[in-house]
Every structure is written in structure tokens, then in C-alpha cells.
Image (cartoon, rainbow, N blue to C red; front, side, top):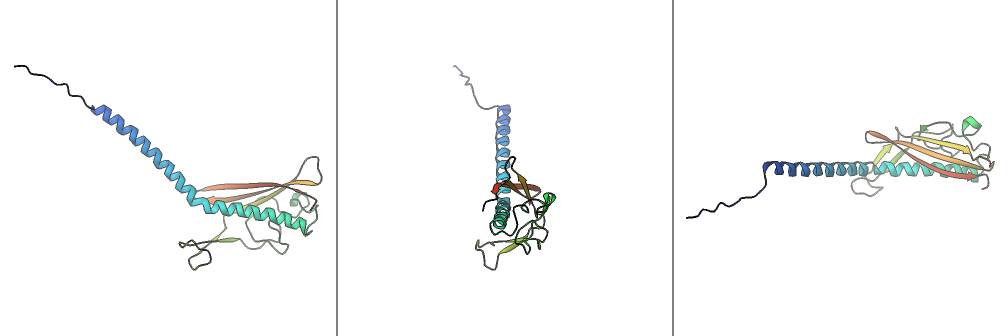
Length: 176
């Protein structure tokens, strides 16, 4: 009578633990990517608002030049004899001159977002006052050219627990 001893092969406990560790690290990595994506989705309305407020400020500067509301010499920051306040300022409505970031600006601005039905102008819309938002318009001369200036609008805004910044830079000439 012969007895055959069969070799049983399989996974050892250590191999199983290593495989579980690799899967856990992968799952945690996927969860962090998911969390990062959700944070970006949650802050996207603020990012869109920041880009719009920067574009509105640029349009305000060009409009003031084109309508001759201010002279080319006044199209500077206050520290250089212009009408635009220095440094960051609350995002407010334009004053009587129709130009943002000047001394006569009005109340803090607010924006309206669509509610759960995703339609703007219905009863479930929400209004966000931009109380923690700051805007800075910095106007500098381009070296060697008296008829060209660089305008940089920087919007600083809250995005969850962090503060983000959006900047938009354009060039403006004295020729309308």
C-alpha cells in the first residue's frame, strides 16, 4: 500500500496580509482623490464668481477710458495720482463714477445662485454676500512706453477652509 502525500499549495498568512495592505493603500489613495475632487466641485461657484468679478473690474477700467470718465493721467493707482485705491479692498458696487475700486464705491456686492431646481429667477435661489472677498486693481506703466499700462486685477476669496486668489492681467493703451 502506497500513500501519496500531496503537496498542498496556497497563500500563507503573510502573503494575505501584504495583499490586504496593498489594497488598503490603494483604497485610501482613491478616497483622497475623490475628496479632492469633491472640494473642487464645491468651490467651483466661487471660482466662477471670482473670474467674473475680475473681468467686470477690467471692463470698468476700459469703459472709464473709452467714455472719457477719467483722463489717462487719472488711470493709475492713488499713490501715483490716480483714482484707483491702493491695496486690497472689499468687493463693492461701483459708486457714482461707475468705476470699481475707487473712493466712492458703495455697498458690499452680492451674487445670486440658482437653487436645487438649477433655474435662476425662481423662488429657491440663494444669495451670497461677498463679505470676505477682496479685490485689488494694480496699474503700472510699461517700461519705455508712456501710452501703455498693465492692469492686474486680483480677487481673493474663501474656498472652504482655505483662501484662494485669482488674477487677471491685461494691457491698456491711451488710445481708445
